[in-house]
Length: 211
Length: 209
Image 1 (cartoon, one colour):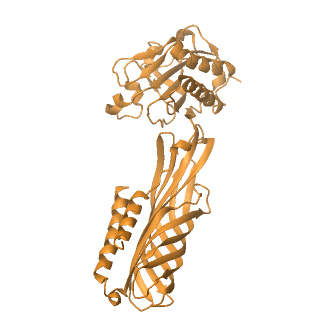
Image 2: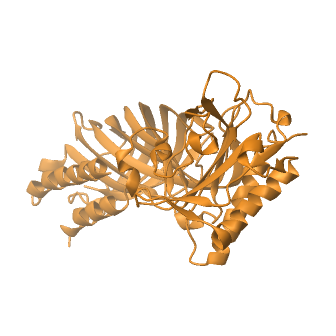
Image 3: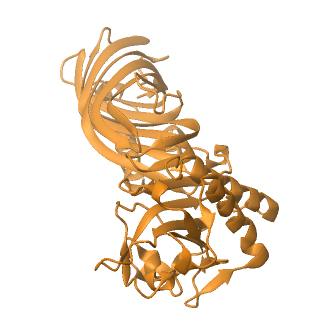
């Protein structure tokens, strides 16, 4: 029996080392990160164009998209928030001052070969600068990007389409958001979580307005 | 984590090996001692992860260079966690983050000690100890599927008072009770939270042999 005492303490030591907190206590809402170009004057922009689909980033090498019912509630939530901030939808991207692109990261295994920070730019079908017009040859963030990739996350970028007269063909990203969380088994719950996350992205971006 | 477990394992194993040859000859072990304790720890002076907890242990051993004065070594570890409700943090002048969090503060001090016992050879053996050494600490924030953390090293100092209770003075197995204060110099930052030093107050319950 006496010999068991040190052994019991060894067992206790091994099992009670660093105690990780209970993640079940965390709420279900998404983590929402936003950043923007502080030199941007959002009041100078009136119209925006948003594609009618959400790009799916998966482990597939072929671009796929959410459209219709799958994407509508997401795009509608963005549109409602943009309208609330005074921006108007444009009929075509050629007529728009701003471009709003939304992507959903379903799986990150595809990106293990993309060591650069802006790994999503290399994804097949990603909203390349050329999508927004032949003038743009590459784009850039005027601010540091600190995204961490993960499953079940949304990437949103608001690009400036107005500066097509200069010599630079860089397409600037004026605002970006990154929203991520764990998926629920309920599609209805997931939809509510995504809507709340999009709304939160605008709530914490009060500068994103025409007023 | 694996390293920590290995350290704990070796300390207890060493203690066990040291005491086994002394069975049947109590006088031979009178100059050495070991304490193995469960501990309850409360961080003080900051609110990062100040929820008191019992997720920690302490291991120490020493040699009496004088009848009442021992020198030795110790290692301990502890984790304190705290839930932080959902809030928006301004990470920079342009970026913001909204999330709830589980804060976690892990500490692992180890080093040398000097112990003075007020009595010898009795059932009750009150003492005071001063411990000094290094402290490894991980300051973490858990958000959904992520952990942001900052590992740091600092200097640690810890006064302790306690008592060892040996029901049979000739048999060196007994109960150990102690209270301690621990200060370390670790500086760390996670998100918008900064910690400059660690203050801890706690107690230990374990065995002496």
